[in-house]
Length: 543
Image (cartoon, rainbow, N blue to C red):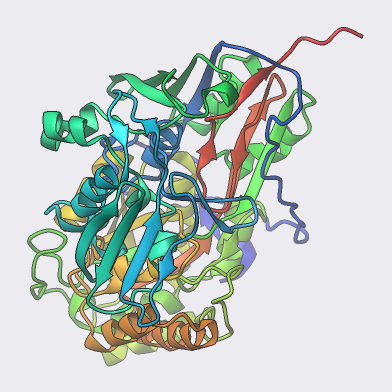
């Protein structure tokens, strides 16, 4: 697709097929972007107290670490639900509620985690290995868990004493430490779990700088400082309010006016202008995740249920899915739609990790003629209709419309159906879609970007994809700690994905967050989480 022929819509209706178009010019050259993860408070003079307001681009799902699947839930939970491990700015796994990295037995089957003692949850319940075991067991076994595949093939979880948790595996599971640096490592108060049960997400209680205060659906979530937190001396704010603001222009305007102090997911359409303003700071980091189009090939009764055949050509014939991939001009799309801020992505393997390789990051060539040939070989009608549901935010719709124009050259008629983000999460779980465009914020270990979405029956295999070959490659990669061996296995898996294309990867964002210079201590790493737990207002200074 030539750049000058690329056309995207400027009008963005709430529903229906999007088609109004205008020409878009390609930026003259690539722009080099420099990472800025933010600055810890450190020795800066800060004010104690105050309410920080963050403009949140989408509403989180339920505040339950076991069942949630939203990046925005991770933002909120990061302030009130610490994990056994965390990532630092360099992407290294570091202890948080654990006191050291796990000890793994020579056969790889026993993982022993040393945990903090002498601290309490926000409700005063003691934190110890037994409490940790309760949460990990829930992550691994709850029927609705989104963490089960992240936990691996667990045999047993026990507390050997007050300060040590032992996970026994049926087979070695190398990704467990990285998994415990995300929601699988979030530890919930056992008293709150017993009291609230399935409603824990409406009344979350964990260990963290803040505790849950209030949620007004579709409007805001508020957390307040927890005086019982073990490191309360380094918590400065009284309250944080996450205000739901789906419109990127409104978030930018509220930053400028000072009505909010932090905003996530800043649009590439706005970021260059915001970066020139003296009282604003742009934080940016490369993403470990991706954006992609998932095609429903077998999710009939809901994610995790046995796959069933779907009687559509695109679900049954990989040639049509491969044609769709070849019809996407990834480089042109990201350059034009996102002003050179984002990068093409063709696999779930993040390029900045040790597991990246030429094979693992190989990209299908943009070839609309090849796409049309594959459609002809499959005996498919041309143009081939595809109905794609997508989040109804401006940037997502802008990209979807550009994608619509791109795949048209390859013989596809793409219908775009805008949906509220929170509804879209339910749509993919239920399997009520032909194709859905969503993103994944990414994990430091590639298993977190692959197995949960691609392994047969996995908790986030929303498209119902089933391949014994891919299952075998993923299982082998999870059982070894040899980086070179894992890299080769993920490269082979990528080759298989490019033959089957159950998920068609399109691009990789940069995590772009902006905050006013009135606050400090806001940090954003490659996992995409906006960290506010130790943020503060800058103290007034007199010259």
